Amino acid sequence: KNEVEQSPQNLTAQEGEFITINCSYSVGISALHWLQQHPGGGIVSLFMLSSGKKKHGRLIATINIQEKHSSLHITASHPRDSAVYICASSAGNQFYFGTGTSLTVIP
Amino acid sequence: DTGVSQDPRHKITKRGQNVTFRCDPISEHNRLYWYRQTLGQGPEFLTYFQNEAQLEKSRLLSDRFSAERPKGSFSTLEIQRTEQGDSAMYLCASSVTGTDNEQFFGPGTRLTVL
Image (cartoon, rainbow over all chains, first blue to last red; front, top):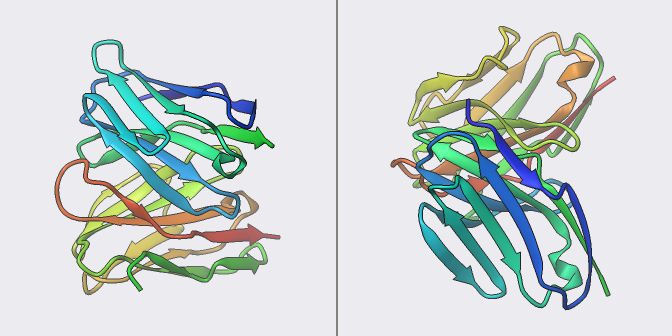
């Protein structure tokens, strides 16, 4: 089983701060996913990456395959970024999820 | 509607009752996944279908749980003789065929067993 660990578990930031959420996994994977979950349960896929770096707006995701590590960065954070961010690894058809990082951005 | 839908959104039931949830995936998606999420935890894989075939089941899916996708479109997840430990958010996701393709999640069904 692939163990997926995220840090920190909880994060509070002031509006405008640069935010980093980290994810590590234990075995080889095909892809790494970053998901966003708002209160009420809805999950949105932010990124799927297998190498390098991807950017979408103020969000940047990176992955280091050799170190089995990925990071999600949020630049110029905003209160609407407040959510739980979940890292998930996939190997074939199996997905393994981290427990999530709860982010609160204070105005 | 272009997203994944789930019904009901909330279900409260008494211990020992049977419950059934429905998931309607995005229409062109032939893969459908069920997950369970408890408070403070990430989703846990339960089972997945490719078209109507159930290809994989987690050990979490005890014999009280059964999932079907009879026509390769919508899916149902039934829990028999519910227990308080079954209280959780049940999430459905769909994707197109292919390894590691992006999954699109439904809003979930929150089950509370009293």
